[in-house]
Image (cartoon, rainbow, N blue to C red; front, top):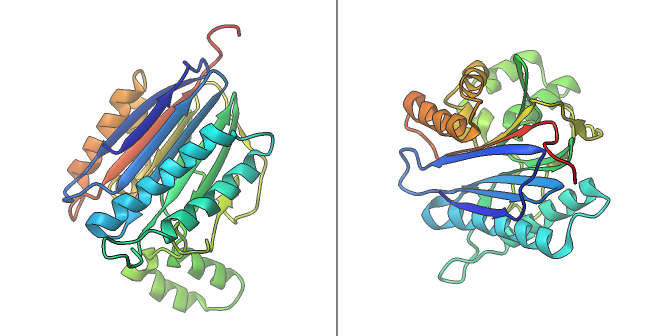
Length: 275
């Protein structure tokens, strides 16, 4: 597992669970980061692209830069501003990576991140990794997949393409091709606390019992939302077990070989003790 954990202090507001598998791939390109202190919880998942060397270096570079900046500078009062700045710094760092021969590495990575201060949930997304909110009997994806399918939806909504063209293109494998990721040397789409139309919103206010899930695409391309919800709820007494069983279930049901698969689960709870 490519994981950087900085568990500095026990956070009385959150429980956590993490699991990552290599799947049927020959190398691991996912990288996860978790940071806790008494007041905040930060989690990040990056899913690298670019082969044996490139993808792993891209995801590691992005995650380690984010962690270093969080520790050095802190977030400050403007949390969305920090997340936006960090996404662009990570993009520049990944774009600048070189191969052993000194040539541009041409690698990239997706990124989803959450920053929680007590019950405030701030998040950022580039690419097609996802953030889910599980509340009671419901599961909803907070993020959009930044791919050709999203571009088609926007073009259809604005009248640039016909419904027939949308339906023909949406069914092709090309529909899942990423249109935004870190490593493009200029992020095309960056969602921060956005709705499903990309409009900026206030942070989500979590309720006791809410579970936030960050994951790479190896999860939702193998499991339906109802399967994800059922597995988490059936095992939510222990989020480590729930995360492990999610990745095991994804490995079992992956239809055409299982991609690298990473899950971070965060459960918000009533504060357990006074400061």
